[in-house]
Length: 126
Image 1 (cartoon, rainbow, N blue to C red):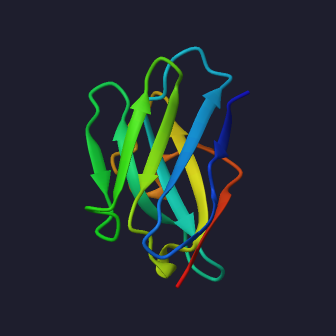
Image 2 (cartoon, rainbow, N blue to C red):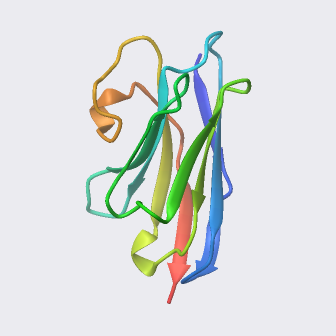
């Protein structure tokens, strides 16, 4: 059974940094692509960043460009999200997602992913 476990969330002041990590287990092969999403109460889950694990090609939401960086550890079937210059509007529950086999076509779309972590809280105070 595939399992994704996030770590590294927490609370910071605006301008601070956090590094989120996600480790995948239960699948022999590395994920085709992995991504990070975030969600606030009453809002739809939004794509933050995604990465193809073999080629390293990345995609970022406009809100993340220049501040966040996604990277993949192919050996460990894991992905990290380095978040710098955090803003209060970045406050959300962050979810790791992964897809094996079929290419869903859009790294920032929740429908492109079949497997999800349980989510981790990120809180940024002004």
